[in-house]
Amino acid sequence: MFFFITLNFSGFSQTLRKNKYKNLSAKEFCVFMSADKNSVLIDVSTRKEYKESHITNSFLAENSKKLFVITDTLDFEQAIFVYCEYGDRSKQACKLLIDRGFVHVFNLKKGLVEWEKSGYKIDSTKIK
Image (cartoon, rainbow, N blue to C red; front, side):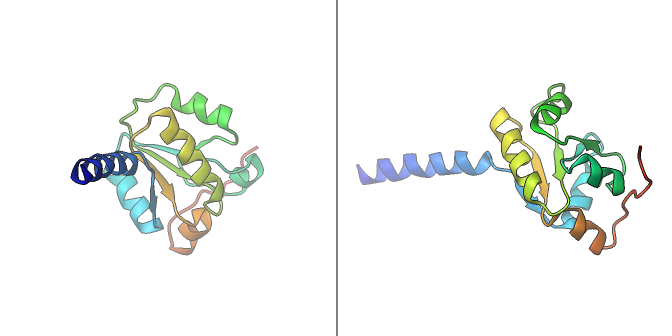
């Protein structure tokens, strides 16, 4: 009986682990994103932060409604890379995407600040 319960619990916890987003360093984020040409990059910063700097070719989703507008047309298997200024809002956005059924969701750990600190390019062209 104990073996059966352990086996079932083990399978359950593996299922839970599969349904989590992955936190990536700036280097991992860049490598993974570059490897998947069909991925989507989403910035969940405020409009003001996005206007000041963002990663090139990212979509701005300053709230959950805009996040879902962007992702509603995507395949649940498509890779989605999410970031914000420090990595806190992006964690929440990743959780929302996982809850919606997306399988390949990646968070930029420590956000755009770490991205820039690691020497990766940002777009600081002022947007109106």
